[in-house]
Image (cartoon, rainbow, N blue to C red; front, side, top):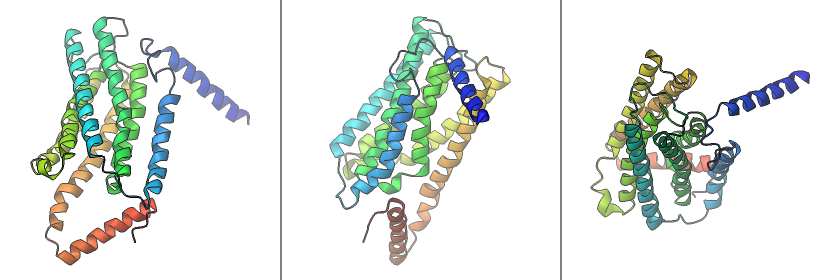
Length: 293
């Protein structure tokens, strides 16, 4: 029992110590005083992920066309704002793309970088709505492990990033990812208009390719920072490399299943296609306990 108490006390002391070295500029910003807010939001997301499909069982899917158009184009604007702010503030602060330590001062450009990164963190929380809309529209097959893993980890891990390193090297990944999300939500916004527009959206698969390139660039950039002994938390560098590798594997598998394996199915006979769709439908039904009979 004493061992457990000591472990708990050590954990509490470590947490208090970690707060003492956190970025003082952000501690009074929304959601930043404690990790509990972020964990509560993420827990609510996971709870809805479990209960949502059960609620939709036996109900007609919502169409949400206008809602999706507004949502996706709002995300285009938000991500463009983040990209623009990071680009301009980093340029004004003479940021290096090779090695940029965190400046915790109240310099206007540094605070602007921190604020843009905070908005980036907030955008990851807003992106939970992607899953909510999938569930309300009964697009359950699109809620893959990659989808949930990406959404949950990004929002949670970026709280850590903003709390301790809201600047410096952190700007690079957010800057690049925000630009990609402008293109991604532009695609989704246009696709929400329906078949008349969708037939022109031939470039969907290139979004996945761009995302995979992003993760390779992230690993290269992080490795360069380690090689140059950049004064940025090394444990964060190593964790980022490992994290990016998981996305390369998951997005690579998604690309193969969607754009390499899928064309082979086009050569199936009508009976084979029907059988394949029934199998997929049954898998989804079992996953969410939905009656498809």
